[in-house]
Image (cartoon, rainbow, N blue to C red; front, side):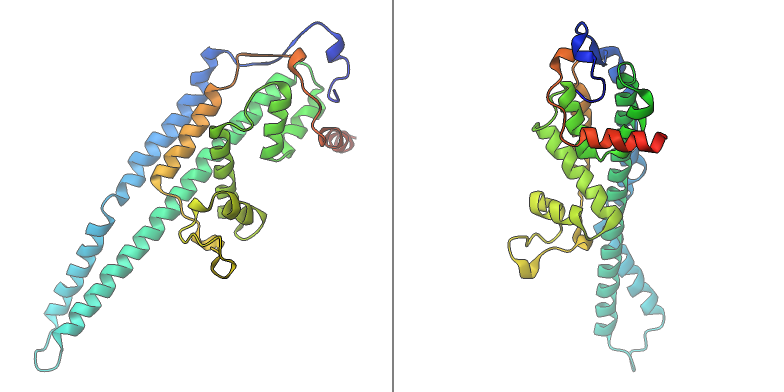
Length: 259
């Protein structure tokens, strides 16, 4: 292995320890975030249709104060009321989607930072701390998953890991717009676009069409919880697989930065 060449020559050591008593430490803040987000923010959008209809009704009421039967056409007031209702509905719907995506970004970043901190804490016991800390903070999330798989944590290929990867891509599209994340998300997980025409190049969804429902937000949150529950209590040095192809190069970069 590259991080510590002598580890495989020593007795079988613990490379990663995640006792069951630590599970609530990572799950409770996560569950709190999700529950409070739904209660304090998302519940405010429970009656978008009703609020839109009220906006239309108020427009008719205001129009009635100034209605002149000799000059005004009642149909014009009703038509404008319809436009007010639809505009209000559209604005609230777009705001609802923006809030859900922002909450999705928040729950993913909370998870990402907590996971990296845990990985650093465990790997610094048997790796060079001056290398492992900047390495973990600088690698992308997919490489972090490969590193966990290398250690002996079976994450890759699981359904919850796929859902978390979709969550990561949603967050990247939300942050950066058009780019590699948008193309990958549209290709692998087109269900997160409002207009799913990914099979027809002339009608491909744009990054502005990104849409996440509350149900999908909950799916993301449940997948993160499932991730934590699937980490084994012990990983041993005998479980180490082949070094990821990129690992030695990342170690060299970290060594150069520390000079």
